[in-house]
Amino acid sequence: MVRPLGIDFLVDDDAQPYGPDAVVCVSLQFVKLALAAWRAGNDYVVVVSGGVAHVGCVVLAVPRPSLKGDGTIGSTASVINVPGHKDDAICRAVAERVCIATNATVTCTGGVHVDGITAEQIAQVCDAFDRMTGRLIEGLVPGC
Image (tube, rainbow, N blue to C red; front, side, top):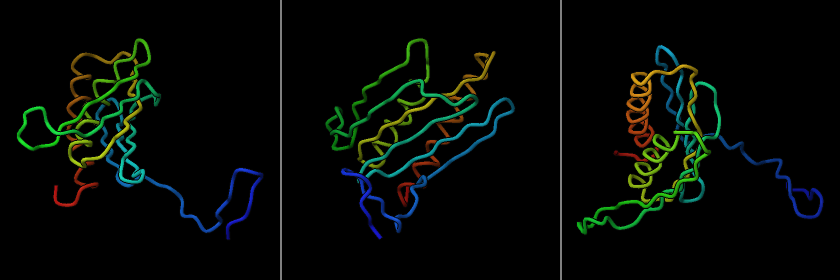
């Protein structure tokens, strides 16, 4: 049943809850990581999280013909970064890979925070998100 709620809103009591279309989680020795994607029409919203969850950046990746001129799909990404945060390295890579694999506009946001993280641990987190992105794409695009 759809009923009015105020002037500008409707509440649909029969609506299904919105949950992620694909989720990949990995536990490293020092942090738990998660990658989740929601379909938004023909596009995707992806959230990266680990350790103390936060929004360290927002990346918008848009598909376009590859600059190689070989007929493949590439992407152009725009990044808004919270000053002092380095989350754009992970979020941009995730957004661009999902964008190219799905030929859809992708927004990726989130962040990973671990107090006292070492350079070696940062490399482990980046490697984990690289592998997780592949698994996420497999969940979103049949046959990938």
